[in-house]
Image (cartoon, rainbow, N blue to C red; front, side, top):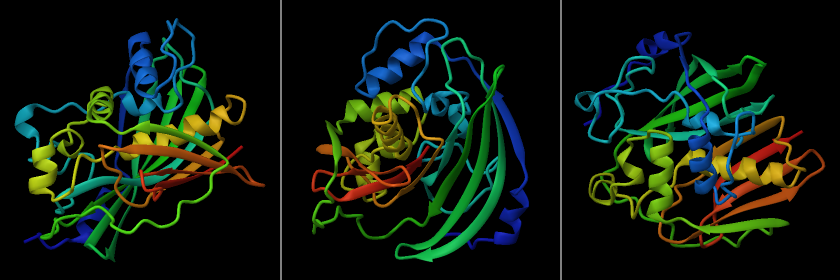
Length: 283
């Protein structure tokens, strides 16, 4: 049984801050390009990195003894100790002001901006919003709001959708296979120990999903890269995105885009054409 949530206690974390720094290496850029189905090349100092490289940088490192059953660090610390077992990336917003480049030593300043609760079809949901500023010696490169959702562990299997809605027509579409190696590579690049992305026994037998779960930030990354590709290589000034349903490994997924009067609407979709994450890009 899930421990009762004391929202007033959790909201005491609002305003807490932390800082971290790292180095954008050529090896990191090569690994991320390969994972994003891009030309790997031979990146040199000063070359631009993929637009969401910051998600691979300065990730928290904890000893094995401080990890929970799901592979995440034990509750508490910078993030509030939400007593709900499932933690996932719900969405967020990105502002791109400057490219990160090979040789940069970015600093990330983070702040808990909000903690809220809602009740959904799966039970109690707790949302934690974190604001990040990523800076280099040239100034601010990226401003971000990251929304994390914590939810209850369901007693019934989390089945994949059985009825597919008619696919939305896309002006631009790219498709790839969501195979376990792709998910493993991204977990390794982001030092993400969450077992739902690589441990099939855990994700199916403990969390009740039908297969490994595709990372939310990886879906967002594919959308940002497609948006920039369709806009002359320039990333959006602002990109907002929200997860709709899990995307599972084992079949084709697509990244889709339609140009609008104000910018671009983007979405990722499963093999049935059902959107799994939606995003809006403006320049």
